[in-house]
Length: 464
Ligand code: ARG
Image 1 (spheres, rainbow, N blue to C red):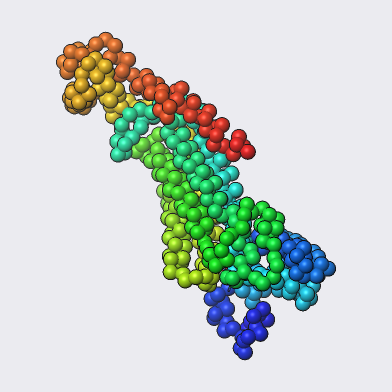
Image 2: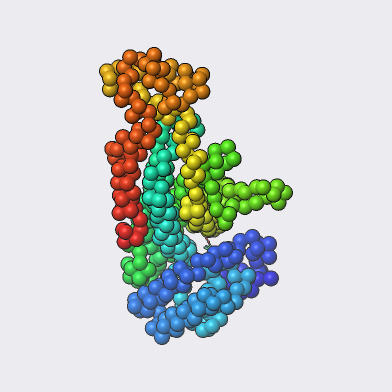
């Protein structure tokens, strides 16, 4: 049966245990204790400054809050499941430790603006953490790209051999994706970084509080501008979950590439034993479970985004208890994306390109065909005609089981008199790659320039 409730004055009977169990959030929102204590300290200091509570009581509240933080840090805080949420647990402990005077802390505050403030502080910190994790992952890709700058790799469209690229160019494509993610988080921060404290339950407070002081104390860039919106707004969580979802889209695409490269059929990379798992039945197996789980866990994060959108879409003004359902999706998304980013960085560091296999792969699938058509264009043929000629040449090569580079000059001449001695240059896959040297292309100079650009502009340590 429930212990004392802060609202019990109005009630004649205790809460039914089923409702108590159903509505508690302490089991998961205890994660917000650092933010909750921080805001209580700032709020209390403001109450003292404004003369709303007595200085000596205020000071004792602040000292006791710090002791409580130590208990929470040390894991000695006596959690009592009767306390509905972390806000009430901390307040109850405060009163337990210093007596009824501790109850002054909640002057001019509601759990509605309190939880909104905690959550904004939490998301702000997580944005910082994720920007760091993204930077670490980008650094891993950049290192790999540098290490294998001269490795040529089959580029695909429709999962079919298309044109040759540098392996480093493929790796740097992910860097662009994760850089966008990092930028998206930074953009979102602007809207997270507002302090709702002082909105009260929905209508503010009659006390002469100083909202700007509290906001500054807590490191917010500004305060929210409408108390009703402020207690019910969770757009910032949606934006954050949406940025996390896109990170998972990108991680999942990388995982898929890795799984294909590592597959028995493609066999283009190898994973170290430390980053693969075996089978309980088949002794020969070495599986890329880390990558598969990243791909699999992405669904979970998209689900959390959807769940929150659905929670929000029918809510009338202002705070409704439905909003408590924002936390588990948010926390699980944070944990899932954090561990996925760390796993991915390890996989990038550990993956080993199989040089001979890659060399073989770029000799397959007529990767130089487009370059050959371009060659004929330079000799004066309209592109469409050149495309047709090379198409016939490829069809002949297919029938005779040869690569374009293996064809004799005479054989080629049969398809067009425009093929001259210099055609051999075009048949070199490596040369073709290196001729693509404008910004954003796969030539050696372009990729080196991209790497230098990314190191200068994308990585956290370089920027801050
Ligand atoms: N545990 C609640 C939540 O997470 C805190 C706010 C409760 N407010 C209320 N009026 N019951 O949303």
